[in-house]
Image (cartoon, rainbow, N blue to C red; front, top):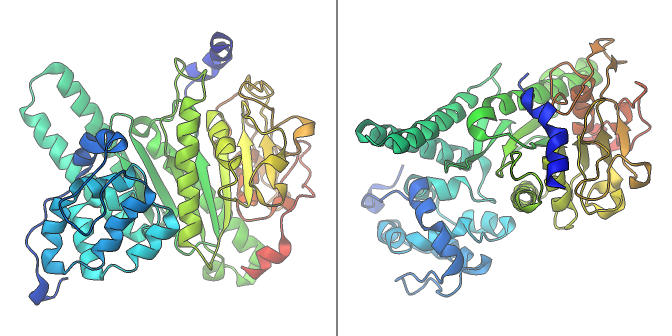
Length: 460
């Protein structure tokens, strides 16, 4: 099976990936040793399988489950600022374990709000990697923490590289430094739109997520989930550019629909360029182990968005490609978090038999299948989302004329052109992202009679 599946991918892979288109004086604490990403990575594996008992008596010991990990945050709220440095030093392993078996995002959000702002600042300074990657911590805070972790890690790798003479070690360090610098470049603003680093794992199998727009307030949030060969080191800049193009498209359509009421009054948009799992290559594409890891990570990301936006929920969409669609389907088959729309492109399928088996509101699922894409209809990992019996809506990707702008939209061909700028696929994804499924063009270039909720759209 692996050989057959790998064979149909070779032609697409050879052509390369697309998508490129202050503290009170009386409470001033002693310096806190930073819990860096390197420190976390060196201890995370042992934390997974052992009890993490700290010497501080008011923090429960025993197996590190979600509730035990949450106890660290809960205890922090009652620790005096002057005592915080010694507390953090004594409970370093438990703080790191927050990322291994994380508490529920909603619980993290509640506990974070109980921590004094001065201590929050200390936590960011002392443990940027943990705070930056903990679902339930506000995104602006995570952005600051990850920016700090990124800067410190770049400085640390650069320093180590200057004194390292081993060839293999230097190659590894140079590759890591290149990856981190590419993440830094991808954070640059475009047309004044803020980009925020909400996930950063600088390990050899690096992971990152960059938000284009304001995830705290956006009425419409879209998460881009990539397929194979989408490494952070090589693709994060291009993936962030795809997110930027979606942001621009969605914002532009909203302004056009609103007419004179557009401009600054248009509802906010945020698009997440998400590479939150190790994407496969030809040698490991034949199984679903990495898809399961991707599903776990995506599930946490979506739950984090829902938890932080409680009482002000956005219209939440997932746009997934190739192997990433299998990961997304696996996450939504668990029924632990619901999205408002799902779009799948070049999908090799998953276990769910129909749209009804997915946590997608109103069955709002779209499928795009480009001509000459060898993966569509393969049902390699389960049911084919593009089959009539699955119940998804066909989404045009072959090229058309936009009935709103009258612009000619290019077609996507093969497995890797769905996210190319100027395509019908990108235009249709923008419509899905702003809850206008009724404006999605079908395979014949005709607007769908989809479940886009005009009432919901008008109320935002």
